[in-house]
Each structure stands twice: as C-alpha cells, then as structure tokens.
Length: 638
Image: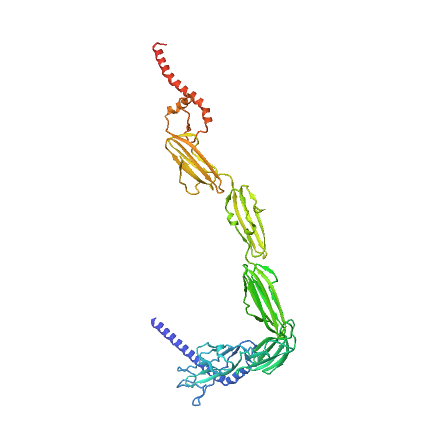
C-alpha cells in the first residue's frame, strides 16, 4: 500500500515539472515577439514624432501634451539579426538571463498656450515633463540668451520635473527634451529628441510723453511729444496711438513723434491727452496727461467759510486761485485775534496745484476771530483779491456759582447775583433760570419748605449750549428731640437708663449736658444713651441742629430713689393723703420701667388705693378679735 502511494506522489511531481517547463517556453516566445515588434516600431519613430510636432494643436489657453512615439531601433553587432535567437549568449536587448528588456516609453510634456500675440508669452509659462516608462532616462535642457537656465534627468518610473516660470528669460527660450537609453550589451542611444521654442516678452514697452514748454497754460495751442523704447530681447513696437479728449487722433508705427492740441479749455479745465504704445507680443503701455490752452483773468475764492460766520467747530478754509494763462503769484494773509484781544499773523502754508488751479488749505481750531485775505496775480499782470472773517467759538458758555448751591440746606432761598457774573462767553448768548421748572428771577425769595431744583441754561451765538443744575432743601422747622426711658418730674427706684434721639437722622446733637456737665459727642451724633444710679435729682439738657441751621433746645428732670418695702409702698399713698409725706416727684409704680403718665391721672386713682389699704388694715385687726371671740364662746358652750 505504501509503495503505491509513493509511486503516485512521484508521478504528480513529474507532471508539475513538465507543466512549469512548458510555461517558461511560452513566456520566452512572448518576450521575443514583443522585442521584435519594438524593433519594427523604432523604424517609424522619428517620422511619427515629426508628424506629432506638426500636428500639435489645441484650443487657446489649454495645456499641450507632447508624448513622442516609441523609437526601438537598435544597432546590430556583427551583422546579426536582432530578431534571431542566440543559443550561446544573450540576445541584444536581453538581460543576462536571456530575457528581453522593454523599450523606453516616450515622455510626456505639458505646458500652457501662449497668451500674447504672435505666439508670445506675456506671462511666463510652467512646463511639466513626465517620465512614463521603467527604462531609460528622460533628459531636458532649457537655454536662452543668458545660457542654460534649467536642466535635469528623470529616471524614476512616473517621475516628473517642473520647469518653473522663473527659469524662462526674455526673448526666445529653447527647451530640448530626449530619452537616453542603453540596451544590454549596446552603446547609449538618444530617443524621442525634440526641441520646443518659447518666445517670452513680459515687459511692456517704455513710453515717455511730455508737453513742450512744460505742463503750464499755453496760448492757442500746445505740442505733445512722445518716445518709446524696447529692450533687445523685446518683441518690438507694433504701433502707437495718440488720443485727445478720448478721441483717437493718429496711429503710427514710428517709435517717436508729436501731435498738437488746438482745442481751447473751458472753465479752467485741462484737455486730456494720452498715448498708448503696443508691442508685437501685445503688451501695452498707456500714458495720459492734461494740457491747458486759453487765457483769462485770474479768479480767487475762499471756500468752506462764509463771511462773518460764527461756528463752534474747526474751520477749514480752502483758498483757491486760478487763471487760464497760469498764475504768476498768489498769497494768503490771515490774522488771528484771540478772545483776550491779542493779534497774531498766521503762517501761510504750502500751495498745491490741482486741475489748473492753486490751492491752499488752513484749519482754524482755536477760539478767536480770523480775518483772511487772498491775492492772485496772473502772467498778464491782472490782480484779484478777496477777504472774509469768521469767528470760532468751541467753548460752551460758563455758568458759575450754581454748583455752590447743590446739596445745601437753607431756611430760605434768595439768589441775588448779577446775570453777568453767572453767565460768561466769548460771543453773545441767551440764558434761562428756572426753579422747579418755573422761571426764576435773581433776587426773588422763596420760603416754601421742601426739596428744590435750580436750573441754569445758556446758548451762545455759535450754538454751544451749557446747562447746570443744583438741588437744595428749604427747611425752617427745628429738629425734634425725644427722651426715651425717663419723664420730666418722675422718681425712679434704684437706677434708670435714658436715651436721647432726634426725629430725623439727618439732624445731629450739637450739645448735651447731664447734671450740668457737657458730654463728649462724635460729630453727627443723633442718639445718646446714659444710665443713672445715684439717688438724686438728675437733669439732661439737649441742643440739636439740622442742615438748614435750625436749632432746638429741650431738657428733662427726674429723680432716682432707693427701693421701698411692701408696707411702705402700701402706706405711702395713705401718708400722702393724710398729709404725713411732703408732695415731691411722682413715684414710678408700674414696675415696667415706664414713667407714670401725669400727676392728674395718679391723683385720680389715689382714693381707691386709700380705701383698699384701710380695708386691709381693718381686716388685719378684726381677724384676731374674731378668733378670740370664737374660743371664748366655745368654752361657755354657746
């Protein structure tokens, strides 16, 4: 059984070996056929490549793609046919193992279409070269008038090189591209070689334009000259066009020339002239200017201000002098008078020319009076001048003394200051005074109590507005003094605490004396507390004031006495009713710490207390006698 399996395994191995040998034979035959086809393709390579060069086309602005056809021609050695098989050594185009090597694949080149005229580039292009095959090297070289500016080799499959726009120079640029290929056992071959021409002109032509006699005013006519220049690498001037007032006057191919302007100016405006130069590549240079042809007397004007105007903002005065024949001289004289009356001559500043007129700008920002005069003289000797005056007042009217009233307390209000002291301003002004929204005349006396608002408002001639307000209180009611814990003419046992309070916390105690001795108080104190323990008559005298200066004085007198016994408390009213005790301070008896209300109320309750005390005494004396009587009656059997 084992021998049978081994025989079958050996047979399977032999079968697989036979199949592998047959497959290798077919592969060699395929490679030989491919190599022979490449030899045939090479014969037509150059002709096909030249045909592609002639037929390279595409829409303008689109990129071009160049891919030379394959060139597989090889030089024979010893007259041997490259297609015949060699048995002793490898065939040409084969590697050391006798296998054929694939021929190089043509490179691909991509670049943009010329954007200018006559196949010129006015913007330098960018060229991309792609090496597509796995054999050979794609080589490129860019040359221009300055020499070789770029070059390199690409050997990696699908590798690429980019010729940047900076590598191209002005004028003609020649880009040469080819593939270098060395077949096994042969010498170096040059395949797919081609040269590309790039004409570059990115610089517009230089153009000068000027007016004969200067850009001043001209009588009757003005001659405008022009001249163009191109570099040696440029494409050359194609034509020049001259314009007057936007209308084409002439077109020439000469590089320099002149034309005349006989149109008269109107309103001091210049006549627009222009020259345009165009080169062969389509680059364009444009120059424009203005010429002035006419004569007229000078004109002077001061803008931005009105004569005798008064303003609260910065004044920008624009002085302008113009003349059709041009100005010989112009000047400005400005005097500034400060609010204090000092005069100063201001600097003139720098003139500038705009649209055929001379202008000068001055800004006046300080308060005061400005007197301005402009004078101009033209080339004919005519003279013109004008002057004006403005007043700058940016300060608001000053309102004085109102802030002194704000937050005050007065017994009555009377403001008798002159209006000229309350309101002041550089220019004239109007004013308004109101008290609680009602017009108020200085010197008027107001006594009504309450919180009041005084408002003052002024507007000057420049429109500046000022407003001031003061809030004050009219109060002629004196402070209220409250004694808590004691009453006037009341006697208290053992000790007593008294608190002095004011009816308004905004008032304060000016002075307080206890038993004639002045007490030390902190400023603004509106409450004072003290305790009395000595058995004597005590007095408290208080003086209080408020913010308006109203003053109030008040006092209280009371007595502190020793605590009495229960019998004494009961018999004291009896003794007083019987005249056994002298009438003095009212005795505080409620036990709550509050003084008894008034002598009339206490005397009204006295008879009831007296009857109760007498009844108690009667019962105390009667009970022992009654008990003795019961005891005697019991013994006698009653």
